[in-house]
Image (spheres, rainbow, N blue to C red):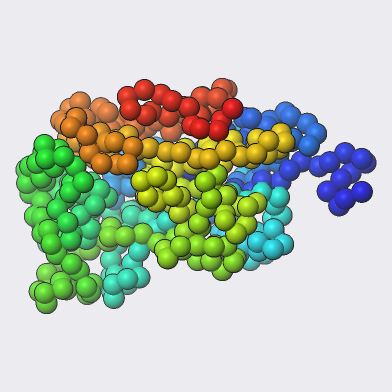
Length: 404
């Protein structure tokens, strides 16, 4: 009789999910809904680990950074009724050989299957001074620190480094909420560079209207206490610097001996399992997931489907079936431009822009619907697990491959 058996009956399969972001919660809710109440070898004991009780709405952090109220979402409440157990604490180590996770250095969790979804944070390590002198939007507490700083400034310059979507949304929000401040958006590329001409022009006009000074082709090589230094030697005075250029992931996966890519993300096979440790699934920003068009980039749009697919694969395995390949195509790029304006670029599956885009009030409503969509989605998955396998593709809902 094995150590995992009791009185001739196998104990539940232990699934530990690290991270309760969009992807981690999707995995937990979907798996609990599919295995809840199921006895015998197909039962799952689900534990969700997160550093705090509060759910971080990453898609609203630019609002938090400008002291705007957002919903207080409690992770234990979101998991209520699923049967999944919540453990609050910092993951300090993973022992892939022993299949254990250490929490806060004094607790150990054992797993049969691990779902690794610890996500990413702003990469402030690549440029000297960014770690010490720049603010980030890596979490709600970081955003709140920036809000406090902006609230104390009666005038001055705010430098937003990074002309990607986070930089654009943040610069627009700060300029709208703090018209007394001079907001400068610095980046190597033009804002909205991946959009079609109409969407890109609309985005740029909105930034101009808000008074955001755009410096495309600018590379920040050092962050100083009251300035940023550019590659051409120019020093730009800044009373606050927001760093949105690049992301990094925790070193836990590499330290555990899992195969990772050059950015530290877990390399997965076609089913989202680690190529070196198949009992580990990697989801969201923590995973280097290759599709036909290349490696997926981290977004909520892609994160939730990875969490759902991991849950479906674990459920299939518990029922004696094999996991199936994960396939995902992008659908849209919604960008807020303050509270009263937005642009939505619809995309092909490889994230290249289509001709169609939305602007203005219609785009605002669309963006808000997208941002608020995880909560009703989680609610539907609790009651109807199959609904979690449906995602928009090409204007219609299709089923994630491998859900049946």
